[in-house]
Length: 325
Picture 1 (cartoon, rainbow, N blue to C red):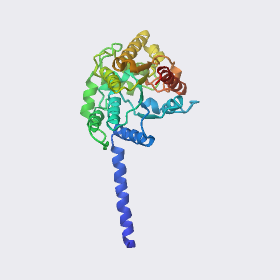
Picture 2: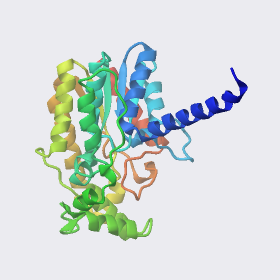
Picture 3: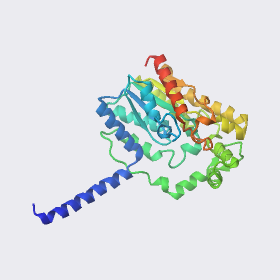
Picture 4: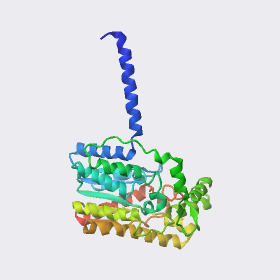
């Protein structure tokens, strides 16, 4: 080859690689995670245990004695099984069901599914959020489940559309503790407050946990639909209730916080079992840990420190063993 052409060829190759990498970074993360799960299942020669989950699967604290992430804890708790985890921040039952449908459409039917129950994701402040609701991703997952190999889908532009976010901010938040407020007011109060300030923490817990769920909410119905889909396939489901920091919530809002939290947790757990029937088991872990088990007790999120993650893994493994799955 003419030596004068080599630099030009390398330059073109470098530009193509750069474009390829840019496209990868723009791919919708939900689709990318599905593709990764399919690759893992292919390398493993099948799909034994599918662990679905949200951001709790990726968090740990630097001071944790046990630094294992939750998927590793589940794998260690089930040493005779091969666990493949597909997860992402804020994933809800609508996302989980569509991920599973895509796996099944490609011949990857798990023998067992492990899934979290996070009632907060059934509330309108999460379900109707332009980004957290994953409306764009679920639409494309529906399309991909009817096709062959998943193709890249670009991240949603609507999540950055100011008009879409303005409409979400204008929605009334149904929290009776704080009185009538729209989502935008809550968001501004939380973002404008000081970290750890009692008033800011109170607003945070009211925003994230203040809605009393109803069985007819779309997000609650999705929980039952997920259970019914797995039951129709004959796939057992072991769910765990993502723990809620009722200690901090009650500190700011009294016993009414705990009562409503317990009711919401029960409602979502019942919704799953209605769908799964005898093929579903739920680890009742929603109110079993204290504030010290949360990575940040003030943020109202379910992220667990090492002892909390280990407790959840043990609870899941015990249900798998007792059910003989």
